[in-house]
Amino acid sequence: MINLYYSSESQLGKKVYAYLNDSDKELLAIDVTKTNVTGTQWKTISDQLNIPIRNLIDVNLSDLEFNEKETANFSQDDWIKILNKTPQVLNHPVVIHENKYYLIQDAQEALKFIEDPSAGIDERKK
Image 1 (cartoon, rainbow, N blue to C red):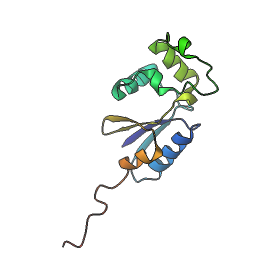
Image 2 (image 1 turned 120 degrees about the vertical axis):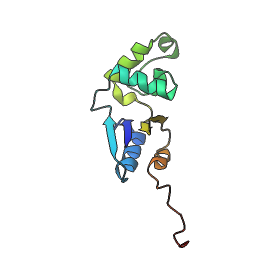
Image 3 (image 1 turned 90 degrees about the vertical axis):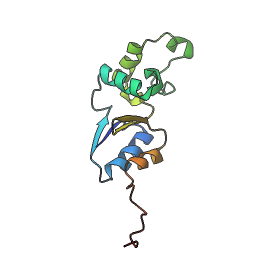
Image 4 (image 1 turned 135 degrees about the vertical axis):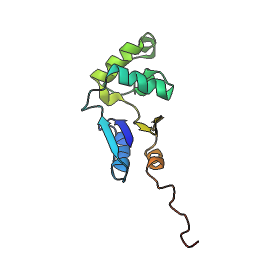
């Protein structure tokens, strides 16, 4: 089972979803723009990735007009509120596979979750 948290408004999110959805693996895809993710879930994700919640957010999107000075004082709860009110700002999809969390920065990274580890084994050794 692969769990995917992604934004369908992100090109990267769409690509990662397409790769994982086209595989034979069971996929639970959570489009954060259509499904509410709780603050506890965001906190768990950031804790498991070992990054602050603010690192899940692309503050350079035009929807957000924050400057560095302004965001320096934001609390974890402030960042969670931003994710909940404007989920399209999720900067990278998150994959949960075998109880491990991965921040996906390139769509090709998703392939490691769906490739068959036995692919390429020489069957002629019978």
